Length: 441
Image 1 (tube, one colour):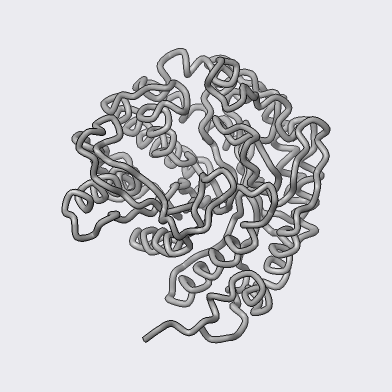
Image 2 (cartoon, rainbow, N blue to C red):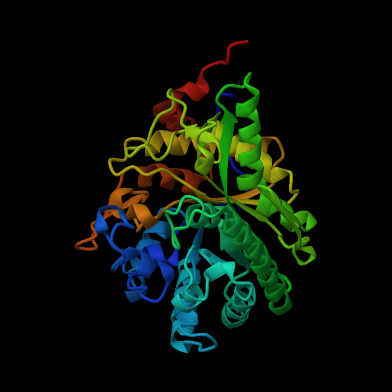
């Protein structure tokens, strides 16, 4: 690289992300409440409990910290089960609470990006079969109409659904998320209905708010064949890549959903995104395994040479981040990085991870990619689903028992970047000096 500072475009957005169930606390009317009350479903038998106590107002403290540290956008989500606790029954006080939260976020100087579905469903939806049920997309559209109708004067960036393929694979293939199934046909049905739900939400939002920007957040999982010379490795890698990374996003372009051995035509989904949100964490190597049909005939693992997060959940693979941005560019839409981060309670991996990944963002922008902002996961440690409190993604540490927040050193690194709108040479020299080394010719 040119040994100078890496500048970002004017009006580039810098922020952090959260989701309702992970930070609000006392969300007791959704599928994840049932899940974390079921023995054996959550590591250590933990529950979300009070989470980060946002519903009682602690968002003010966390987002005041964000603003003090130079951030200008925050991505948060709305909890469907609070808005519609029973079918067709709306809780106006919950809508008012979100309205006050959004007004407070704007008053702090942050631009809100609002996600309408982040893994959680009301219990009444869950009991009716969740997204396996054909009727769920229409119920979702009604919730979206009520919510956007109440909040559209405060928000112009909407994420319909967060990580639909993670929802599908984790809930209907690996069984780590509710409802804990291993049923590929049900997975296809759920994915199909999520596409329909997104399309319904997109059209609903634009009917209420024609100038809104509407997209979805895609968890891009970078992957490569472990043995490039071995055809079965290449085949299973391509199969997984298409099913996990391409299926949902492609359906929003051409209305054709292809997942595993199933296909469907969904014309209502054509041209239903104004931007693409990219969530990126890590990269897999994939080997073909004949005797692992439940794992889709594959074994996934990380490059042994990669730096690992403390629980082994994430390998630092910034090249995969660049691949995710190249993937997003092919949709010819503005790109927002809606999540990126690493679990690291000791804050020993995060400085290198953050620096090397932001360098990839800068490099992508230099090639002409229309990247509008970077949103880090997360502002404060939060409830990480089935992994509960064993993984700490926050720039700020949370003491779950006392709700005390403690500033991690990486806050200062991200602050310098946000405040200056650049990745300074000094930070690269300190945390990722390999980026300055000349490449062998």
